[in-house]
Length: 223
Ligand code: ADP
Ligand code: MG
Image (cartoon, rainbow, N blue to C red):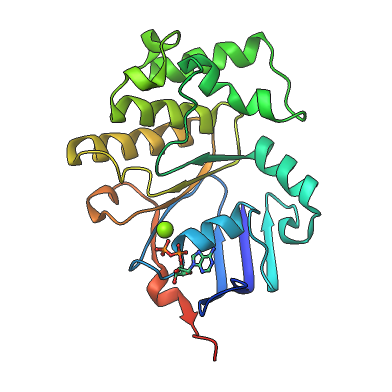
């Protein structure tokens, strides 16, 4: 599902450069990425999402040469084929839970909202225990409940790949374990591969693979 080969990435300003010789994720596989703060975990995830583009090397996602597609095609590909769960969830407070889950369909002209999509949104919400919350607004919900809305939104397009960057950072420990289990189970349920960045080693159980980015990359300060 994901093939990274000979990557080099540098931010225009700053000393950080990320080198990854090889990183692969098979279809349907769940991979947790760990490593010290600042080692490049979020940067790698943004490269795989096509938000950043490497200076050298190639990234293929679902057989698309993501890193060499022009920006509009990368954005369309991300909207339709990749689900993302953000650390702060990035929910829209003035929209209902249902509309937050359906947001990818409002934002991307490549996606068509129909009755079967609405049905899938309801099924996902019920599966993660927020089936009764659809007309409510996220601001009146707990962090754990908001997190589940974000999980449903990431999965509603039936993506082949789900990317999550420290999705449990604002949850208490009991909710962290439950939430990651939900993310894993639901990703597996739609057949999606899952790449999750985490700080929290308590959430690693059940992943097919754990990758320590600290030992995978070469970090070269530029002079
Ligand atoms: P992690 O997620 O592992 O904590 P990041 O990928 O966020 O690490 O950051 C890796 C390094 O790149 C850090 O040294 C960080 O300060 C730097 N960095 C992150 N974003 C930017 C940016 N937009 N511009 C310049 N440097 C950045
Ligand atoms: Mg990070």
